[in-house]
Length: 259
Image 1 (cartoon, rainbow, N blue to C red):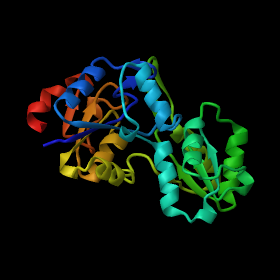
Image 2: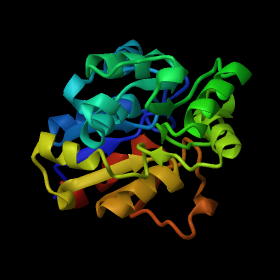
Image 3: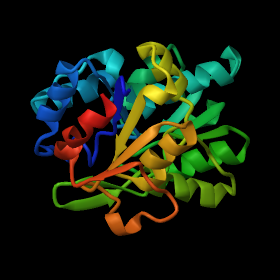
Image 4: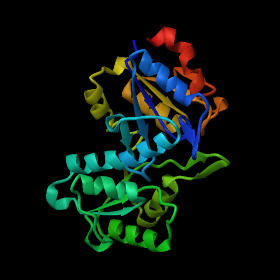
């Protein structure tokens, strides 16, 4: 029996600033049946509160304890893996990363003083930021990527994702980053503990095979691919989801199997 459904956001719940048809009804139906919901996104441009505000603008409600962004995950990853004296961070990204780092009392500093370089999606990415991040990593700072998604879906197609920024710094420095977002399952333990569920009681719903579905497979949980985002049905070869749907609106068709 499924007690928790974890949704990716971009390409599953919305594209850009447009709600995917049926997303609100599906989420409400799940909750009416006593099935808990969580949101696990590789997006890092907003903090958890910022991501919730976006969902409210689109007509959906979500609680802060349901929202798991990579900006939030990165903060926890740093706290768990680095001593307090080695947590000074230079970051490339949007305000969401900075908000979460400061909320968790992690110092945000100039690249010259950084122990850690965090790279996420940044629409204002430029040569200056690339150079500063590269120089910090080259002199020995830890290199962390929020995620390496190459693209993400919007209303009129796709845009380059955080992976494009991460790749430039990896190329220049010759160093591979530690990737905190999906398919890394670092955040899963926190989700299971928060909702008090077992792996066998969780379903992951995503639009990208190499991150969302790979995350589910690596974690040992059931997976469902929706075709409203990046991956297409013909892409399903090595990574095979348990279910494939045209969109989130079709998820209720398996309620009799999972609930």
